Length: 444
Image (cartoon, rainbow, N blue to C red; front, side, top):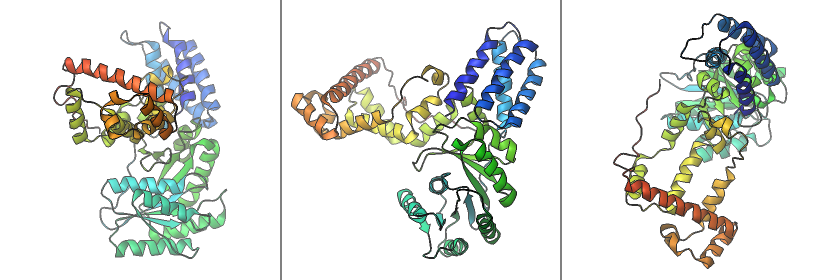
């Protein structure tokens, strides 16, 4: 996420890192470079100008303490201003204390609205809400079928009608929810390739009838300032409550994320990446600012680990490690936990300092798929006792997993080395009682 932007800002800040003190010249030189970087990242011109002016005023008025360097000081000032630019604090989704909470999802075609509906539904379902998805995108071919498939995957009911009437679909969905005790309705409205009067009138009519608790505007972060402009136009017509940024795991340069809050005046509420139902994050301005400045995001990393963590499975794993009985079945379970947490590149980006160190590394999530295929091609005996894996067995496993014998040999060798390391750690008591107990973190 924003690796290129992060790398360039980090490089610009190095110019003052070795300076003995901050002065008008080195501050001006550094901020001129950062302004250019922001404009290259497609940040709105006025937003970039105001941001640099605020940082400059603060930096020139600061005394550098003996305990910190000029680079640390200006990084802290930039961080604080970037957090303010992104909204200051996170904004929670509005949930009605009683009755049905209705949420309208709006945006242009191709922004990821339908996929986000399923992701949000899955998230709210995990929070004990009884969710109904309403298929009110009646114009795009296969939009209703797509929502049904996503709903089936997430085990969420989808309401639709056989007639192409979005207003009636929304109205009937609310009645259906009331009759069947659903407490949350998420309405997937139609997108267009561009903003037009008919679409806006339809959305206004649906809004008037259902009086939604939330209207969320979904925007493709990869479209840069076009995303900001469409967000502004939608807000003037519909007056939505919050913004959802999608496709930040692609080639997004960061311009939309850094500009949209300031230009539109509405908070970013969610980040949506990838296609999996759980590929959705609450937007925290301080965490994104930390990632952009190459400082990682440990809090989000720990939260992802906790969501994917099974305490009972951890206790069993702890016992096996203590007895040096860790096998391929256990290894396969750990791979599945990692896959649930997200892509390897996104996880690496959350670790402080590692983004710049690994920026040139090829992090391929398909490598996990290959390892998983090899292990799944083994028999139960082979997984629990890798010593029986002779040449013929390895050939069979390679054929069954669609890999080469060399791939199989490499995995077995790496696993053997890992077992030896764990054996040494076990002997030193590293896997003591509660070594894998779920950490009791609490974040406000």
